[in-house]
Image 1 (cartoon, rainbow, N blue to C red):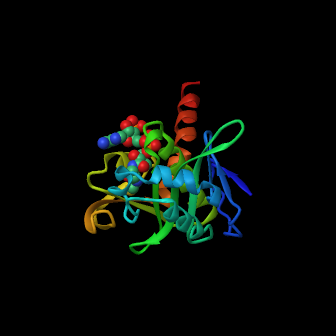
Image 2: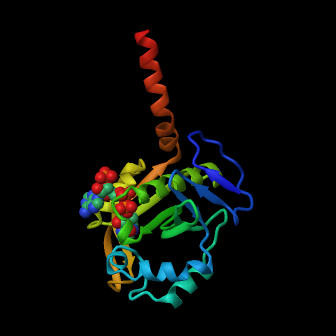
Image 3: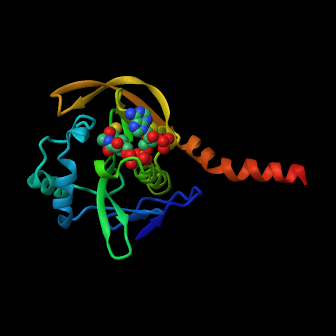
Length: 211
Ligand SMILES: CC(C)(COP(=O)(O)OP(=O)(O)OC[C@H]1O[C@@H](n2cnc3c(N)ncnc32)[C@H](O)[C@@H]1OP(=O)(O)O)[C@@H](O)C(=O)NCCC(=O)NCCS
């Protein structure tokens, strides 16, 4: 089954999601396979990822990649997707994105992109599609997120997806072997719906008023 990120709110009962593929303009999001282990290990073995993620081992080797892939799930409560850049003849693994219950929230988003692909809008494109999927397919009441207070890029990704800052807290850091201060964000279903409606509604009204 594939799901292009659609602008409307078409909530459905979660069904079998194991084969779900989410497609955006440049990306595919789907459960990773064992063929991705080498690319995953290569990209994930990066201190710039480990210092910003809660539980990424560092150094990160092929065995870590295999264990991660084996434990991925795609169901109504937990989604672990690989992020793939679409090419004419193949899909290139560039990162991961997930939704999972955490800190009392039903759906918390987490993501990383391999460093060589940073700065091209890929995380924002993937996160927007994941958020749409959470509201449209998983009936999420809200999607939450957290970023280290030093992580301006991740904060910006969430802001660009419509998340609102809800305060600071502490989150785990496997890399630093302890807890670190994090900024917490949340996107409520009603705010997401409103953002989806905003663009078309306000501009059309202005055109009609001028006519
Ligand atoms: C955070 C991360 C996923 C962003 O990936 P990306 O594909 O480069 O993100 P995008 O290009 O979609 O957007 C990044 C935005 O942050 C901005 N940015 C980059 N570095 C920044 C910084 N230090 N401070 C503030 N903003 C920053 C970019 O300018 C861009 O915003 P813009 O489009 O308004 O210019 C990537 O840096 C990463 O994987 N980091 C390590 C892991 C991580 O932090 N994951 C998130 C854990 S909460």
